[in-house]
Amino acid sequence: MSDFWSFRTMVTPVIIQIVFWIGVILCLIGGAIMIIYGANYYQLGQGRYLWQGVLLFLLGPLAVRIYCEILIVFFRINETLTEIKHSIERRPEA
Image 1 (cartoon, rainbow, N blue to C red):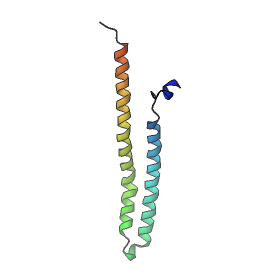
Image 2 (image 1 turned 180 degrees about the horizontal axis):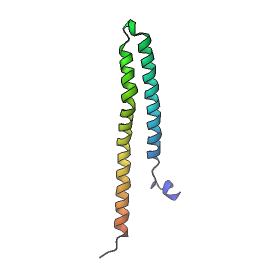
Image 3 (image 1 turned 30 degrees about the vertical axis):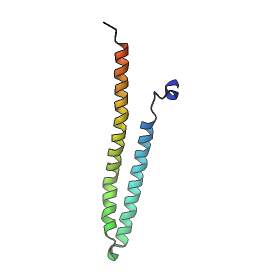
Image 4 (image 1 turned 90 degrees about the horizontal axis):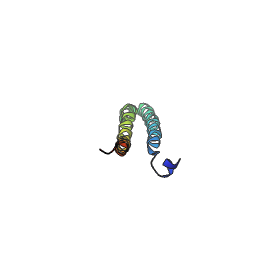
């Protein structure tokens, strides 16, 4: 618990995973709404919403995943540097 209060344990990677799932759900819901709207009003010239909805439904979760992975890379770099620091501190002096 002391590592948590001294900011040695990161909580942001867990939050990023939650943001990922919320983003995926929003992309799927938004894509489905756009597909339904575009299909209903296709004859009125609103067909572009159909294709935009398909793209959002398919590519939206991928874009959210890439964004979240880029954010997590920074935390992995921090963890690796911390491990390197600890291994150097434990190494006996020659």
